[in-house]
Length: 382
Image (tube, rainbow, N blue to C red; front, side, top):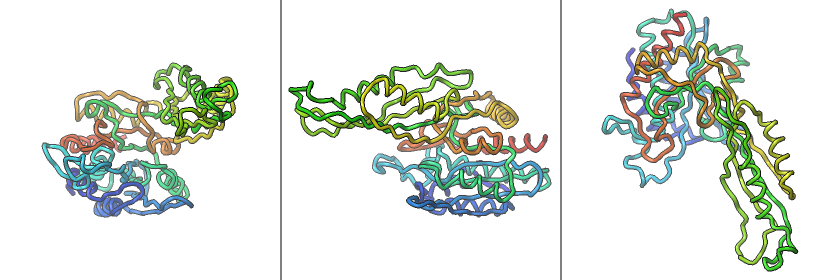
């Protein structure tokens, strides 16, 4: 059964599935996979204070090794629609490119995965000696509470397992096929509130300036060298994202000052060891403070092995280039999946992800589908 990845990507973009709305994206994938013979189950999860999220698990085959394609249908908001040169949810093809929110991150990759399965089954039939599955969530771009993490536990409770996984995030950095992700840095947000004593700016000795204490604390954090990186990771970094005193006047020393900072950390750290270092550093800077931490994900590394090697071979066969194995970039749902099976991440060029006029070359979508097809061939040939 021939399936056009570009056409499916267009139809997926036309479902405006801004997190946490589905807008028909997962039912569309479910329908396409059922036509290929997959047994599909949609599961919805919710928690108090969160919106319900629709997720999909589909499987073809009931025995042998289970190779999983993973991804997400949710997208970030388009922002100022007037700044777009096209309707962000029209799925327009122009100048050899597919335009729209999700074209890069990551509806085109999902379409390429489905097209790859169709082509693989056309060549091999159902007796390929294993199982293929899809794990698709509508909750990756936001807090990732009701998505992949819960689907993985639900799959395990059913008595199923994943043996290998490719996550279709847009990993290519400068040229399509130049990078495969084999791990990710951890991400921690720190919410820092510093307390002082309010006073008159003419009498600073009678006050305790929370703004100055905050500056000293932030300097202590950002001037420190957390580490120098290692063979697979660059050095860990700290970046300040907001500073707020909320002082409407020029002659009052503030009693409270706040800042938010983000730490991207490699596998030399865990969130627990990082929290200990943060508090010790702030204590040395001096002053009364409160620190609240939110961890988006721990750092992880999947050492090069079967999945990454197969991906690299398939990429080289299609593009002629051997990809770099990298751990750069932000977080992804691979931070949950790696605990269940070996994985690697590979997808389209990341240059316009989340931007106005997000777009991808149509030729790259076709090439990605062919790479994923070869990955299946190589995996089930072993």
